[in-house]
Length: 250
Ligand code: F6R
Image 1 (cartoon, rainbow, N blue to C red):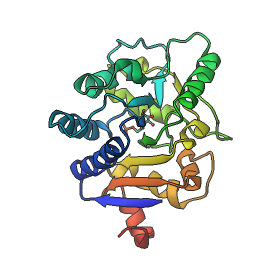
Image 2 (spheres, rainbow, N blue to C red; image 1 turned 90 degrees about the vertical axis):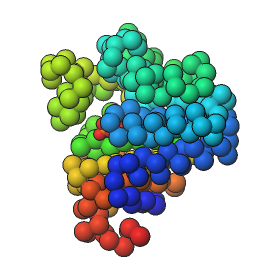
Image 3 (cartoon, protein in one colour; image 1 turned 45 degrees about the horizontal axis):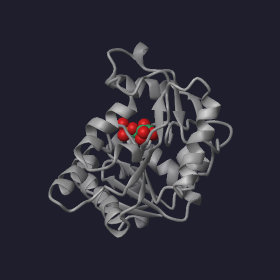
């Protein structure tokens, strides 16, 4: 694992976007595993800017998103399909038919999970998977549990996650209680992982994920077993690692 420390959110975004851009430049037909949430927004803004400047061509790129809320249609303004369209896809030249997000409206969530994993496999797996991290240590919506769920599945959201995500809804009651998420196995099958984090509220969970025991109670800790992980985080998010494991940061 390598950790890239940046002074602030803006630099975090530029550095992480640079890594994704390099992937697309080196392999035009890359499969990008993408994430939603607040943290990647700056990354997506950079990718849009560099595409407009003629630096990035997404015409051959495929994307697979991590997760989607259950019960929200793709045109609901809090669905992750809407988020991806508004914050990235409609501003770049990616073919909409190449963009994939789990179907939150699927009646048979198990079948949807199987289909989604088969789709990821048929694309050859993600070349790079972008991840944020939740306060619970969740990646995708894999919340603390007794085991690491392997495949794409339906999951009940942790109360902490519902509270954190309520900032995007009119009230906490409106936050969906379930989501469909790539499983830990689906995420770990990506060739490279790029995890981004910003802000002091992520400092403790970032330390526990990468320097604590590997346990499904801290889902992101499984990333310690992945052979190619890059963490790009700002100093606030790295504050606990800087205090307890300073030699990990250079
Ligand atoms: C988003 C996702 C989540 C977020 C996490 C952090 O697709 O899967 O795991 O990455 O909740 O969210 P932010 O970036 O809003 O702090």
